[in-house]
Image 1 (cartoon, rainbow, N blue to C red):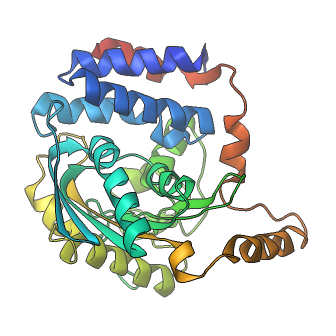
Image 2: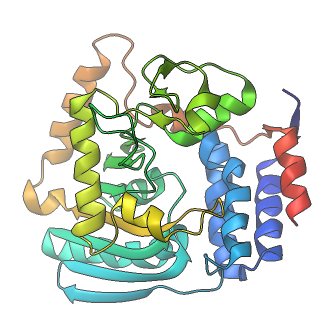
Length: 332
């Protein structure tokens, strides 16, 4: 695979130029290009520049409103409802997370229910942001069907990621972001592009056969949930939280309404924020750190998020797939 070395500023500028050329206003382009750059910086490659062509597809078709603004409505002291108005989810989150953080600190717990936004980014940015504000956070969203429930060979669930973050005073948060599929579809697509096999159990071919070929999974096949019935149950939970609970679509309903332009569909997101200062008291940080220290003492244990945070310290250039860069340049 041929690569091109780009500085973080060059990655940001390339992403922003492309977004501005395809219908985004400066605010939207700035928010999304920063998110894409941060994903490349942290080594979250399947959510960095790799996603940009799909964003452009949604912008070109008119499905995504690159100049839209979300509407924030405080339903009660601890429930915030946001109409995404076909904005990209990072824009919705940029405007609404401060309101959620404020409500959680005031009331101990608060919920953000997002409708009609287009989410195809990583989910750690929203939970990590809340954890940096001293809050425990959980977030989830659905997508279009790509994952078969345990016992089936046809898709019903989206890859349905969940993210959880725990705040640590003076330290980076403990934060994970994972698909409830055995592997995120973006990672399967990256493996296909780079010619790598995937582990057995990742997914099935279009004929329902197990395979290690990512192309046979990505092109007409189906992903499997992690952990069999256990992962399937968690994927179902995400469908309910990010669908019925927030008043948005299930994955199969999203698919029926999507124009299949390759861009992220419209959907909902559920975010929960909890103030440990309210629920625990004053010693929760020391208590949690004792637990984390115990984990770290048990061998080669890495706390969730540590690898990304270590990557973040490297401010140098990143090696990006040359074919991807050429494709992005053709879009602007």
